[in-house]
Image 1 (cartoon, rainbow, N blue to C red):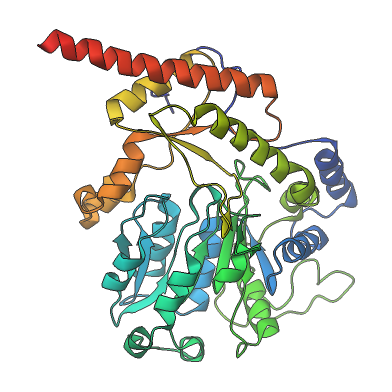
Image 2 (image 1 turned 30 degrees about the vertical axis):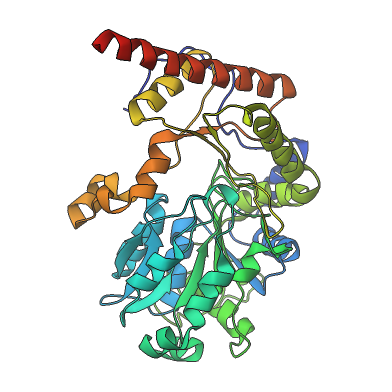
Length: 423
């Protein structure tokens, strides 16, 4: 049984409920009424909408971000003896996909803006490095120009040791963007997915666009790749390597082959229907409202000395406003937790993103130590993710703002009183 860390009263403001309106319900009902609920036309339509939104070469929907990442690592031939670089400040799925491929995760620290540290990437590259997975935390794109310059560096390309045809064709380390948070974000005026070789979205229940559970691989490969061929391989791989999907076998066209040892990670139509209705109004409605809420938070907190502003918008980058990661300057874990408890007691559900990987048992047992990632720990100990989603009303936003200010100010007052008592 799952228990909560803090006793709370009945909540009035949830953290991140899915966006379900009449259009979503209608799309799901149309799928149910069609008699076809597994992978079929709705998945294809969702993939087409992803291409329209992002401008990527091709999109392949899966049943989760994690399985999509495993698919990409399999596609590139990454396995035992290989290394994949990732930031220590991310959700466990980023590292678990690497571990399940048989490769070794190599962690580096992050910058002040939560993005992966470029200098530490360079220090971590060896002849075993096959890929890097930068993470667009909270929807804020990484510095992909610097990452790509590093990967295109002749010294690093000379160090790259390809072991199959795809790796030889690329001729360098593969850049896989963990874009779980960043659908709709931009980098130098273009969708950020166009800044890496492959990007992977998450369509999990709390994401900006959800299919309840789901993921999507977005291709942006160099010109010497046959994108249609790679798309076909990846699609077959989501269905056991089977040359025809169940939908394609209708009407007597039943004969199929198993071309290779694929996976079973396809997205069903019943899930795609939820995301399909959302993505069609994403740019015109959902993303706009998320941005408005983030701006309200930003404006309300910016004059407080304890407020460390998240990175949301510059001339080069714009977030997808997936999270509003409130950071409280000079705040330790215990104080952060007391603030969270105070907010929960007022009926406001918040979260923390993330517990750094080296603090988790699995990765500690592998040998990672949080002491080696000081920026990751500094972010973690003072971060509180506030509610941000289209259904949130302005009155609720105002209540959250006032409650946060009250809770933070109270926490500092309590610290001062406790300090005086120790004198």
